[in-house]
Image (cartoon, rainbow, N blue to C red; front, side):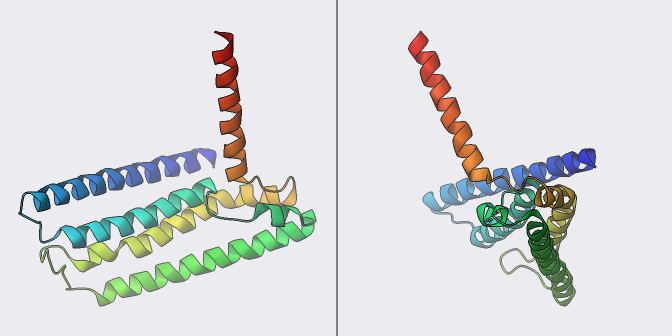
Length: 184
């Protein structure tokens, strides 16, 4: 299971990286063309769509890493049995939401059949809007891959607050750097 998760994480990282680089290049090109008086007619629409794609696929990557906003201190204060059931309930709600989002996202794609972008008539609207159900499916997969770990943590040690952990690690790195710098 860990190999599947690692492979899925690499896939999402690659998709997010390509989207970030593409969106960055698009924004730079759009600004440059506008600066030189030849604004691209399709820039605003493509930049908006690129940001949506980045948001959906980036959210799936964050879900796989457990990096979405949570309140681990509140859940950790509960007894392990209650913590497990609250976690199971919340994960069920997340799955339900994204299953509905994927289902209705595919319904919308069917409705959009034959439609094209306003500024780029050769690009089907279905392609641009496919990030909604596609991102929802990726989020469902990410949550499913992380679910065993989440339920194990709920039953045993509780959850780690990733922001606090990261801050502590950065603090330790800073103190090690100061100590190392003081020895020289």
